[in-house]
Image 1: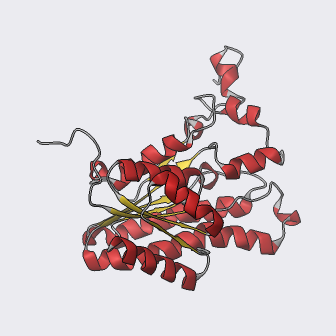
Image 2: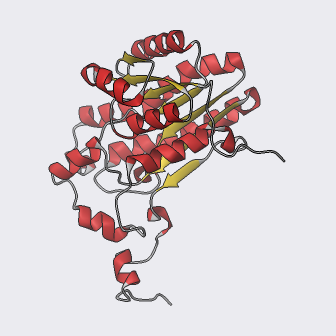
Length: 271
């Protein structure tokens, strides 16, 4: 059996939403390094030119992923720049506030769901039409550990990211026989501008996160990018419908208390 010594995306045409910062920008940069041609999409039009320069992107498109008209335009413009779309990485998203449902604004709840879930659906739908026609393609969406289990106070983000996981599996089953793979990554807390804004507003204590994580630290954006590029590449040619936790062991840990106490021998054992 022959195999390539490294991931090679030469000739692939990639659209990255949320590409002006964070995981999206890091993934776009790695896609470019691996040989792909990249277009960045983001709602922050002012940030796109600098991000394109940093990542080596061929072009940019701006718009709100929660708008069907904007998404159709962005995908069409990106396809025109690239000559088609082979790869899609959906990382556009916004965070929520740590509040219980009975204190939450319905308008804010819906906006979080619209951007994170509806936006992923619309991007998959628009780019998927091109992939179905071409009978090939790979998509990686961004779910979250918040979408895998309950996080009190984060109902909007959790519902949206759980929906992204379900959408990923559905599309993988609908499009698999057309040569299109659809997967997702489920990041843990990652050092992105969105997470930094939560830290700045003291929405959560970073020490609690580190103590709860078996690898005892926040993730880096490049670690998310590597997982995403693997799933987009031919190295994952028989992987579809997967929601891959990239979480430092967060979803594996099920004991009571912090992992740090178990590591230091302070934890209690269960019978």
